[in-house]
Image (cartoon, rainbow, N blue to C red; front, top):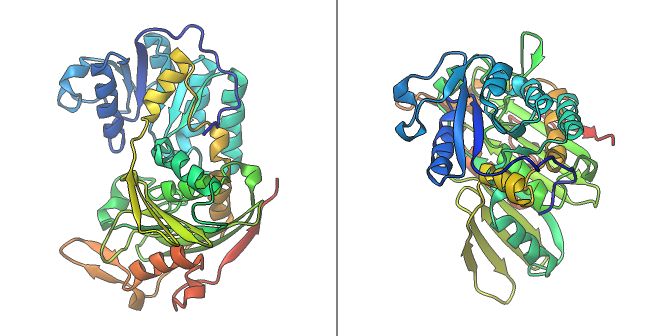
Length: 397
């Protein structure tokens, strides 16, 4: 999947690549372990860690040694001479940190969502393009070899004419999940956009992957977005929501998610054709092909790590898998959610608390999520009595 239209400065990147990690706690721990894996292979070296409070020796995997630490991201990049910055910090900080790296000629792996608004996304994407650096957006599902394989099946007509794409994510999060950071579950904080909702952060991969399989990854590929945003938890953002995107080709893409599932399961994307369907469990890289006249066929695929791909792009000219422009359509969805009315609280009768797990559950939501992915309908159209009628947003170029 060729998503990189920019020319990047790769001439001086040879040998082991020095890396700075900004944000090494929370999800950043995954990046710390991934950097350790690549360092053990001799591909990268962790030169620095940027955290407001330095990591203790116990928090740093032993094989990573003693990287330099600082709360000043720019100063740390200058001191270490790092060539790549991995940015896994609160959503509102993404653009400024990416641009700070770009100003220094440092290439970037930027966690998803890349920005809390389309304007901030454009400022980031235009800035890194102007600086001539490589920027990879951390939608790891788009590094799966299943994505191009599914695209080939579609192009070959394996399921007939494409009729739509659905996405389903039924996850569970305890109430403590929204206390893990000051910005968690917020739409805005101190007057700044955050937009930390189910569709835009924890289950953002379902949205981005569905759009990629619809061949509608770029901003100009989206013409209409309908949203239904609700919340069972005592938060600002959505935890039970759905979105329907109409692409420039007229295809409908509907993604329904919740963090209040009764029986949490792996999220998936389903590609509908008039003679079959393809289901893709993106966390497992597993694909099920069901089509007329054939028995079900199941496949498992490998995946290319996005940091390893970024290093390969810089050292060997490998194709960059998830350049910023390949997330433009996703960012149009983020923008529609940002502009939509604040998520409606579900009535007390629509959810219940599981005391042992300290989490809220919406009875019947698992079936609604699956039904939305199957029928491309929104919650209100499926008869959920608590669903707010959808808000439509016509997307400007």
